[in-house]
Amino acid sequence: MKKSEFPDAFQKVRETDGVLDIDDQFEKVTMILRHKDVRKCAHYYQSFKSGVQPGRIVVPSEEKIREIRQIPLELDPPLHTQYRSEMEAWFRRPLQEDYELKLTQITSDLVDEILDKAVLEVVEEFALKLQSQALTLLLNVPIEEAEIWISWGTHVFRSEDNPLDAEKAEILYHYIDEQIEKVLHHPGDDLYSVLLRSQFEGRKFTKEEVKGTMILTFAGGRDTIINAVTNIIVYFGDHPESLEKIREDPDIIGKAVEEFIRYFSPLTHLGRVVDVETNVCEYDLHNDDKVSLCWASANRDSNVFKNPNEVILDRKMNPHVGFGFSHHKCLGATHARQLLKILIKVLVEKVHSIQLLESEENIETWGKIKRKVGFHQVNAKFNSIKN
Image (cartoon, rainbow, N blue to C red; front, side, top):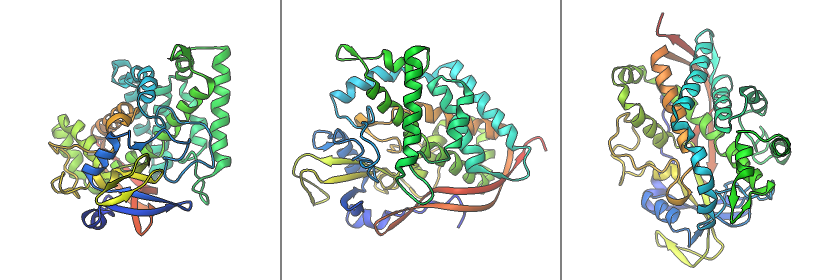
């Protein structure tokens, strides 16, 4: 099996039952697996709530490591809509020409660095660095700040022996508190300052609201971006003809990004809490039951996607839910898409082929299901197109 193959771990259960019960720290969670059911539950926020106690809708639950609500993720309309409207213009900035040029320069410089290496460890030496340096653009802070974030490692809330490390989470929380205090005294044009000037119901955001937004910004786009970047590089290593295909037809880069997000689904799922008696796939759900919307399963549903277990770079119809769906669609999706488009563009311009060496897969376990989500480490050699 090629390193870039990501088997559909949920196929059998999706096609037979449509749901899967798992345990999350002694709480039962029902994973919703079919594309139409995932989209329906995501859309009907009146029945499937996000605005419960902070940390509960994340799987595994983060209730024990934070009391701060991630905004706007952990809210439902109309509050969600009000907060989101204050932030959307900022998170659309990646579409601006100067942003794109700066992001291209960051990506190009990092690719030039790796072309000089005999062997590169892709996850920490490239994907983590690219994610962190690109984030400085989204926050509009000096690129040197990325060195602090890189020092935290690939996970914000997780250490090698603990899937929910409260001490590690405190490093992020303390860092954000320091930044908020700094801009309170010296406001500027960064995201912290913009949020502190933002309005909600006629008043400015509180420090807690700013902190909740920044926690989401740091945590929500970290593992997912790192996984996406790493997985795309591994795919190109296994499929050098794909680099050539895009070189010959660069207009398909946008479609390729959507297909990679569909196929790899960097975020497996996200939870909701049931607010009324209901059922999904003839499965009864009760008030306060926890469910998860399994984006990874929905994105392989053969009732929606032809040849779902193949990467089709120029796939025409691609209603994937890799960035969520409906009201809670990922606020950082524009940044992620732009980053991946630029990454692919730079790779096809500078890299002839990628030789994959040793690797260690990152496997998530959900009940009886084991799902490959990415890699803990990948060693590779990048061959320059000039050679």
